[in-house]
Length: 419
Image (cartoon, rainbow, N blue to C red; front, side):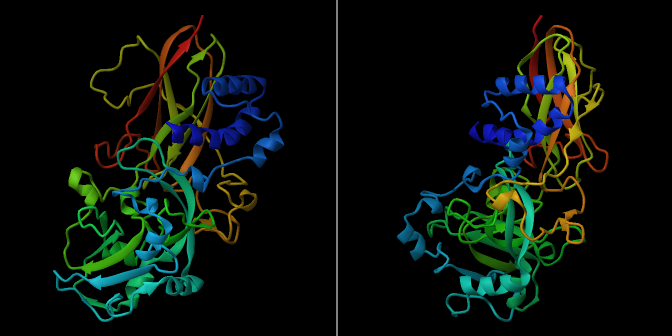
């Protein structure tokens, strides 16, 4: 997959520093990984490697899914402008659900001439703008779509402009989809989640920037929703409508195919640089990424076993395997992603402004990079598996191994040690 190759290349420079620190065996092993992954030769100088570090995904390398026929981002510029998908013509309506008894005093409505426009959003941004790092991934897809620095205004600031009074239990929202009700992509959240988050959590935002740049049409321009802990289906693009309702049921389009739309991101590990073959007794360098979900991340582990080794019965999640720890790499100095000099701008919410460092590490709802130099083994056919241990000490795929609530199946790959 193109995205998989891109993400592997993005973290190659970060993991290269780790293997260089392991000495000659690490350097030789990393060269083998690069050849196995069909990646270009890495620059020889460490300084060059650090300078080219890309932890964040460049905007043009993100994988964005555009629903609709045609998808809104594919409309010609004049059509986009006409339907409000341009900063100068964009408007957001926030109204009460006509099919419930919700009460708000001042709806934001095109009909009333009170809808929020771009200038109004930018005025709110002067006081309320926030930034945070967030991974975009799909409920049912194992590979991440990209990680970015997102900027916007908390949705609650706009909700309070309407002066809600009573009978509001849920927030329905949807974007532009060709004015065709059958194409509309909807999502929803409890009103409590929109109005408040516990200390250390991140707000739901009306987002207008990614990696310091205005959103592109494919990314959901001019404005989209970002739900920090949610999978991509909750972060609806091309947002134009918010409805406050007393209906307690979710109305999410993504639920129509048996998906759990309320499930927050899970913690899970993936390989990204793993050789297909190795030499006997030669150390094997492995790098990967871990998606850090709601429960955080404490360890990334691997398990190497002979292919003909009998597996313990009644152990579907390999809990009895001989798991070994990999190294979770520290935060980078330069994040890449098209940011000037790769540096983060004014500190995102996950950073302590007093120290200029992350409040915790790894950061929830982002990617963590991992690396390990596996000791050499005799010739033969092997299987290698990776997993995470979350912040509660629970091993992947637990505590939520269910399908349709977020992909976190254990990943296993073959390895041939040639005699």
